[in-house]
Image (cartoon, rainbow, N blue to C red; front, side, top):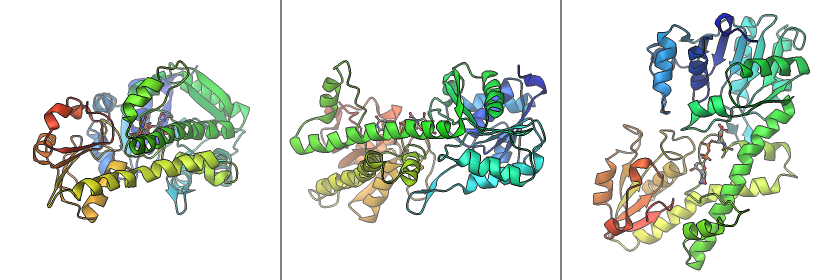
Length: 403
Ligand code: SAJ
């Protein structure tokens, strides 16, 4: 069994995955050294504070730092287990950008010692664990597979539920060889309550990409239905609710598009690797990527009915109850409205205090002053809105929230 008290963990990348993981491990008795390239992130964490919004993360970080079990720094340190939790965006024509993984591996290489386990948690194209992480470590002189162990264990936590899902979710662990798999399984069993399932690195990599592609394809189906229903004059949300009463039908919700740094990105890694085969997956990406422009067209059509419309936008985040604007369709839509000068723009985003491009107002002010009210994110603050109270405005509800 892993003895937490004597184990030191070095977590590279203190973002939405790395910081919750590092602080969770810190409160479970491990000694954790967190690494980030941004000085302000390191300073914030060392003060026991957080730089991202995630329920209860503030309490966990405060407790882990307060107990002395979590410290952050700019440089890695020697440890028993290294966890890489850095971004894997795409570049150019939807090609995976693995530079963060390469950089993180190069940075830990001088600190890795015989007996260490290196885990890649970043969502990665098939082959990354073997051909990038294990290879860089081997090239640095480590006896990978002999006394340095390497595995992929993709993160699968849902922003907004990260702390619960870190512990409760089943985990997939795929090592570059059986010894690596076994070492990584033992490590996750020491703090995960879900099942820890073992496989090889390549299968683990594709399983993670598949999870997000599954969701993307299913959201694309819902988004396509929203276009069909609009053309047919049918309420898509009511129709889906009814169809979902079939015991084997479970359609997801249409929205303004798919955002974030996972579902809108990861399916491209499958397309990039298997362009001939991945047709449905590519098409789903296209359907979801086109949805924001369809919403903008709705706003254009409504704006034409006014001389100088005030367009009120509710929400900028990529989904409900987070502060994360990365890849947000809501942000894309609001920017487009501004660029085309479709009207006077007023914006509310209750999860952030300020924004570089838009002066934020309270959502009550936005609702009270808008001619056209565009609901983009189903934040909890907007749940009480009723159509009967919004009779004076033209309502464009991209989430089907307002009844
Ligand atoms: N969305 C819809 N309709 C829906 C569900 C979601 O339009 O019915 C939109 C959301 O508004 C958002 C986007 O899709 O813009 C993605 O949101 P999400 O809540 O489905 O997922 P993420 O990106 O926050 O997290 C996903 C999760 N993956 C799966 O559920 C398969 C999470 O478990 C992963 O850990 C995460 O990606 C990741 O890091 O890969």
